[in-house]
View (spheres, rainbow, N blue to C red):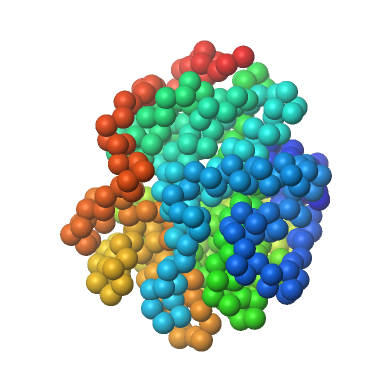
Length: 462
Ligand SMILES: *Cc1c(COP(=O)(O)O)cnc(C)c1O
């Protein structure tokens, strides 16, 4: 299995190299050269299997020769052992034909744990046998950073530095990054906003001496291995409601198009998915684009679903690559236009996109109302991101096809917004109820490339 770049100018890589590289050298994103197929019988046989067994079956064909079957099984076992629910991704019913896929039972209470826990084990296994180490640097508005620190803490071949905007993330998010005591993980509170953190991260990747000197690696949402990990729960949940003998639809709260793109891959592998519905908050570039208004950047406006407050949706490039007939030159040109502000999607590509994806958006008031109403009618307390999914799913035309909405975070991760909407302050699960009592360790750092480089060089293990 080879991986090619969406911009067509970078060398094809193995799974292992695509994973360790992250972003392709031509600025593109890696995608598999061909999508492996699962037959009706193979999907049917998933019924009753454990999450780990399904994960092995779904991901194995993408991994190629990188890991032996036994190694890969061990990686999957270790990745999900720390989850707080035996089913890993349990499904609950909200209404007739409407189900909620709870993806928040991982160690940091957001769906990013599914990908990040796996990536931690994949990196550690690949690097230790190469006898190499890497330095992972990330920028976060909250959930990615905590999931990364949790996934890599204590691993021998990786040092991790996560920059977050000082004073602008929730206390739960901050404590999840600052309380792990392992010496290979480092939380950096930067004086600036999330865009500043991302800009400094980009500067570091563009500084080739530094990049090569510390063996810089990235695990942001464009890393193919992260997308792959998310394909699994589309299969496990669809089979629970009757696939493959019955079609299923999904609604996915999304910002970077990562989670929903994993659903598209599941469909391309042979899972009978009827509709994939993109749900956005007021930062609705994806909804506007899928409604035929082109892909044009606006100003990001902060919302109560901060993990979806983005203007440029990095994984959308992968969908565009397919919609443009896998023409890397065409994608490069679109991405150049995006730097100037945006582009219009060709009619042919728009038809392809609309054949797979629907979309909707929820305002702040609609999000809060959905948290309140869902609690009243089902007893389920939703986080704001998940509420956007539920609202958009309910807006879809009536259908006999079951709808599964992805719940991306635990309500206790966003207690202020949930309490304001519902009157209930959601408690942390028992297994992390001492989070507020643990000691914090964090370095306050200036919004300055040299200061960051000095700090990182001085703190990596050799
Ligand atoms: C990251 C995140 C999202 C958006 O995920 P995408 O990768 O953009 O699809 C939604 N909800 C929560 C809670 C998140 O942490």
